[in-house]
Length: 97
Figure 1: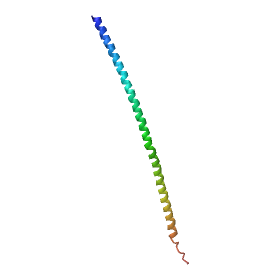
Figure 2 (figure 1 turned 135 degrees about the horizontal axis):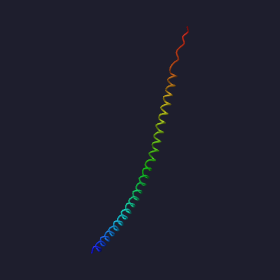
Figure 3 (figure 1 turned 90 degrees about the vertical axis):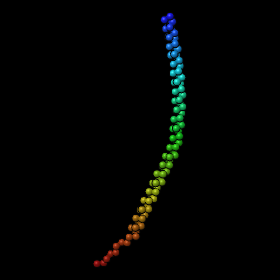
């Protein structure tokens, strides 16, 4: 009787281990498919962020070019005003002594 009971318990434990093993394999397959989907999502996010970043970079370059152009124009204007002011200032009159 004792031997029969031990055989039954060992058989039940073996079947239990078999079911647990199958369940672990199924869970790992599910984890793998989830990771594949997550990888696809990350690839899409990367493509979208690149698509958004590239025009912004171009816009930033254009904006900085405009700012530098305005600075150059302002410098030319101030230089032109300085030369006009120099031309307008009369030279001191020479006195004969």
